[in-house]
Image (cartoon, rainbow, N blue to C red; front, side, top):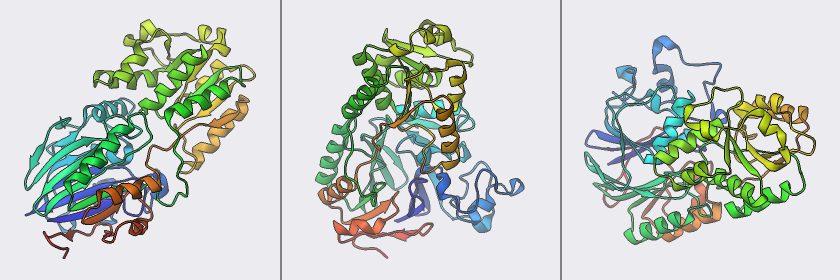
Length: 439
């Protein structure tokens, strides 16, 4: 059996992992690169359209998977492996963002809540067109070729995140996906570690996002809620929050803070749309927020969807009493501030939404200009949705696999502090794993 990493190598995001046995393969995640990881292409410079995906494959920006893409790649570029399944750990764009390029005939597996987020991305044209041949795999095992794949729920800053247990010809392989140990459902991640440890895996493929960040602190959602309330008790105007739309736990944090402050919870229609998708996927938190008498939907200049008409708050009503409202307004609709025109002593709380300054400096500058124009002080109330370095390293020590393969990290060698058999795979190189050793 061979394993190859075609993304997420010495970088954060863009995960693409291939398992191959006897010419048949399965792939885990098919993510989009962050702008800061761009090497040959960006939004301005793209591959030649008449070449399909060949330019991207030739330069290693996309993997050379034969029969995998909607546009066929040149035979001399293609890896002779037949891909029979694509599994997603969660619906962040750096793990699912390139799903639209995949051929309809390839079966795609994900959780119900990941599918809900995918539908939201498609509705906003963040991913173009709804992909076909999707199977929801909550609580089920899938057999593909020589592999038997079972999802296991973990906590992350998006609903529906899973790790995978993969039975292979060389033993059990576990892929953690991305996970978190201080989030709203942290017990899931702790249970995952205990279960993984009990199985004594042959190989562990783990994320290491925060390796090298130099910090160990992760605030809980309750701690973030108290920070929001502390800010609101000083700034008595409108409280404007910016949360990544698919971060259900963080939306809930602002919802809880607004209730405890005695303020109306007003959400832009984008947030209402993803809450509706999560509600239909069975996420009880989304149902609680949407059904609350304290939740209102603000469409701004957008046409109001019929399903939200019983929750609508218009501009005039919104402006009647800014001091009694918490408003979630994402960066994509920051223009609404022109009509809203917040009163003096209002404040803006950035809590994981876009733009993220470290990876989007151009939009960050524009964002800061908007805040300055409307005299909105900026507070950052956030906690990254990944395990800290010490938590990740402790997890590895606990699970204690025979072989450790780090991915989704800039410093894979750091794992050698807790494990004596760390194998650092180079991008695009398939490595043979036997029952007793590596070739």
